[in-house]
Length: 426
Image 1 (cartoon, rainbow, N blue to C red):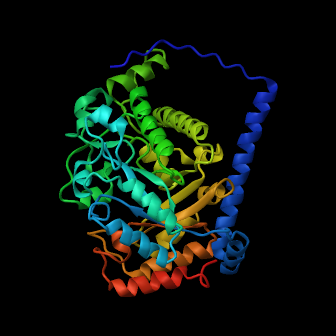
Image 2 (tube, rainbow, N blue to C red):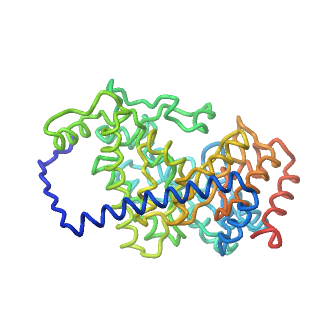
Image 3 (cartoon, rainbow, N blue to C red):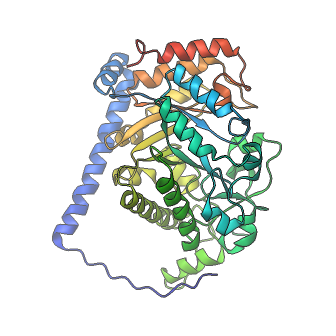
């Protein structure tokens, strides 16, 4: 376990500092109220909804799609990436989010990964692509097709229990209150639960300095070595609320709480706030490092609603957005029912966030166990456009018009082409 030096901090606020904080809180409260009023007005008055969408029309509507290694062969089959990028360009998509980090391994040749795990990248990827750098190809061919490419650090701090990373760094893993490490079903993403080949997962401790330095090293490696148009984190860039009872975190908490241990209740409000603040500190550090290394590199975040993200994953993205650290926020709204999808977009914190950054809508186009008709996808695009959001991102490539769809590929291609044709876009 890493030693923690005793730390004493004295913070002195001047009268000006105090007034600034009070004014900031007052502005935040006022903007949230205004956001709520606008959201209610949009819900009640459809005509107002159209007026908002017209005034908030972005210069460029994002039409993105995630390229993952989970339940997808696009990264592995020779020629599949080239075909995918070509088809996306033909159907007027603007952005791809290829996975570069997922569950303890990288999807590009990484010296950082080689050092920490003994492997430079995913073994199957290297085998199927005969050692070729697939990220380099995605960037090169994506740019030729006028597609933006944002490197996606998928699954955040999650890693397989039997991975080399976990085997070599067992002290990096956080724990439940009963000292167990394995994630429970409610802590796993649905696509992992849907996958019969999913193995037991654990969670790297985002409060541990060595874990932070490892992830930062991967981020810097990507933005220095590749001409990416940005980087992206997702809803797993946080900590499941039941975790945080590992020896390192308990000792850190004791040092800052006069020797008292963390509360037994993982939902204790102060315990949630303390852990969330530590993750926010790390997010600020990432922002500072990224902007120092590559000042024009955007940071994207795909997240659930603020209330869910904060309470269940200690991810306080609203503070990140207010602080100017997030250049693109994609709100993941994967509800089955259309009215719930609509309601989620009317939450006041969502409208408040639009004062600070681009806000787009993450739309589920389907999974293996949850195929979604193209008519349902079309309805969600229509609602997001009417409410004036800055675009959409679809999860995921295979369910656009590929192998996990309930309609014919031809029909789905036609609908997407029609939705995104120049004369139909905003």
